[in-house]
Image (tube, rainbow over all chains, first blue to last red; front, side):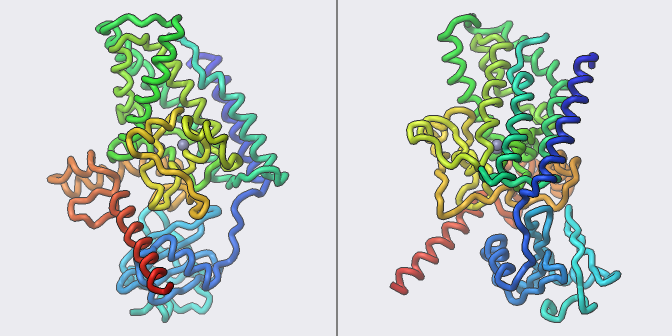
Length: 128
Length: 304
Ligand SMILES: [Zn+2]
Ligand SMILES: [Zn+2]
């Protein structure tokens, strides 16, 4: 790398920093209201259109949900201003330990920390 | 080996355009959503890809030069007809590169980087791969030099195409005039390309001209009843930069180790291919979507 390239690199890095700051300041991310029962159903219909939903549990923050579909758990959680969807065997839920009112579900490349307000995990409605 | 590089020239314009899109969206003058971590990822991918390109540029350009030495014809760089011919030839090459990059997993592993944002704004255009050199998709442009287009000329036209594709990464333009939508790749066509809705998968591979998709049957129009949802079928679970760059390569590696007898399928099959059919490909997703829509229609018809 010559000097001009290094200057260009530093300039680009600075420009990136400024653009990210501006994006944060502008507050133009998608609005993310607390999940309601209806909102949860709508999300499930989009992300798991072919899976029948037997029961839905919404976490204490209204930012994640776990649905029971037979012996499968359908999990959706907030990442940035969107949701990530993953599926896992229902039995995996009980592997998660409740710490300070939260469980951390390990789902491959994501690990949502869901708030469990009443301290009961897995929630009664998700037990088969 | 310093040649004129349209992409380098356009970088200041890219920066100004992103600033303007954010400001106009903030003022409510245009439609755009930016999430800072997503923006940071896109822009860092852009900068990183120019650095990654430095490492492979020598080899890819040398390969093009070697092929050019064995060329069929000698095409002059200063003739208008030559540029017109290259415009079409390069754009057709881009179409097939891009189609391959979506339909075969080993090339998808590199190109998926461009598609991992759940946003569609000007910063998304800059989310470029770091592993294109390894994936070897640049080989597809060698026939142009074999035909007789000077490698520098091909490199310039590739850059022009990349710069063209910047402005179409926006939600602020709904539709261009009808004649333009018919011939050129537009924000509307490319939104469909970035959508993860089953009905929109594997469509609109165009670079500059949308005519190739219309010719080869991969064109899908954007319909207002179904807004595009952006990203990949299985959206990433974190904002980790290295995960974004390498996740599909790692996925291929794991599958090949687990099922060595099916290695070819996991490498060269379509993304989502599995030896036991336990995963979804865009074909199965589209089939399920068609089944759902026809079932819904049948229900409507019996109700009516
Ligand atoms: Zn693509
Ligand atoms: Zn794109």
